Length: 231
Image (cartoon, rainbow, N blue to C red):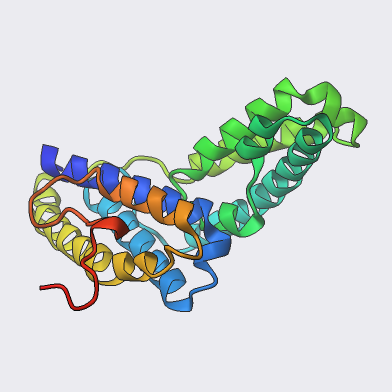
């Protein structure tokens, strides 16, 4: 992956994070949820083609799905207790850090989920005494760490041979072109349409899109859209 592709990939990651964090809003628009799935598929393809992720092999996919389900269940329970603690104690920062729905965890890409899980585990460790009062246990805290580590181990970085690298360069170019088109032609218009209903979400989205400053591909935020009838 060259420097320009790295920049674009960082933008894709930021965009995916916005859509994942706002899963409740995204799921209201069927085509947007489907487009988010395709974005994540493209990003997984980029990870595989760049050698950062091992391609799926027989039997491994099922184990990974099961591992993710177990981790998501543990995260959902822990995050819920953290939000409850933040609500009771009037701690908006804790609420904001832990406010994840189950669908948000499920929509989080495999490569990012362990990072999110580490953050939730750190919060649970910091607020352990309060969580124990709410029925949380040391065993649950240890299990969350174990599930996170196990899931992380399911995606070891592969090594590519010279011939395979040559093939993957072309594949990368195709994926970046397809992903740029998906964002600009499909996802941007649907999100722009949500400005009146979800203004903060739309602002976050176009802030993420602004990480790509290439002329001709930079997404215009809702405020820059010409009024109807403008020339």
